Image 1 (cartoon, rainbow, N blue to C red):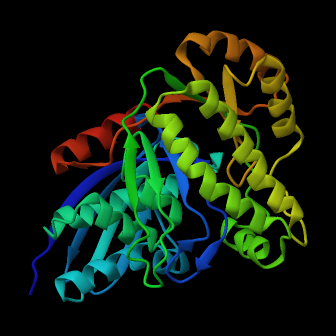
Image 2 (image 1 turned 90 degrees about the vertical axis):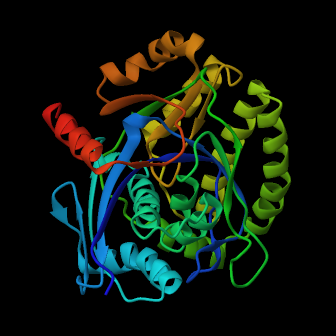
Length: 346
């Protein structure tokens, strides 16, 4: 019998710059297009401790002190553990304890970071010694966005061509840029009316514009990779905004149409275009909250530009972060210290 193993890890949320929207295989979570993301800073990290072994006969996941429901547990954590069970050739149970210290209602990918941290912690606990490319395939089985959170900096998720998904994995394009900051504007704390998974399916089945978008995405992932490696910031900011708009356009073209942006989201877009897309850009995932990406030297200008929305109460919260590093294993004593320290600060 495999005795109880314990390990912990940290991973950060990410924001997709060229976004994946739609799957070619729902079960394996294989995307219709390749995507590029930017990993966010430690302020947007999730810390996860896992206890795994044959003496545990079920799976339980606790997030910020609350037990995850059975459906979500099976949909996310169980998928990850199943992959490791196949690798080690055993039937293991698991207890996972996950903590994040940013607004769960923010629309930020806390679940993606949590799944990435869980995957890395299980790899450590079970001593499976998989590299992050292989781990990204395991994380992908639970959440597409999660596979990108295993890496820091700029990350590519290759859509792959194989039916078994073995060539659909992530890799790092570049390490974090020190001069980039992300001003995250929380404009709504309401739960989404429609989940991303359901919305993607509707778009895949009904959008007339989707084929055009997919062709453009495959051209632009290569272009954005070239731009990032050449550190051409103005060109990067332009493409980020275009692809945010492009994804929300195919949502609108879906039938029935899908709306995630609200009036404040549109105000933010207008403000940034008036300010200058060469100095700041924007990206919206499946939600109304904005990632305003800019350079440190423009920070005060950007905050002043956004100040009226903040003063009018149209922005509920603001999170300032930078680009983040790779997901990493955390010693158990250090994990306990960090959680205790962060709880004190709440």
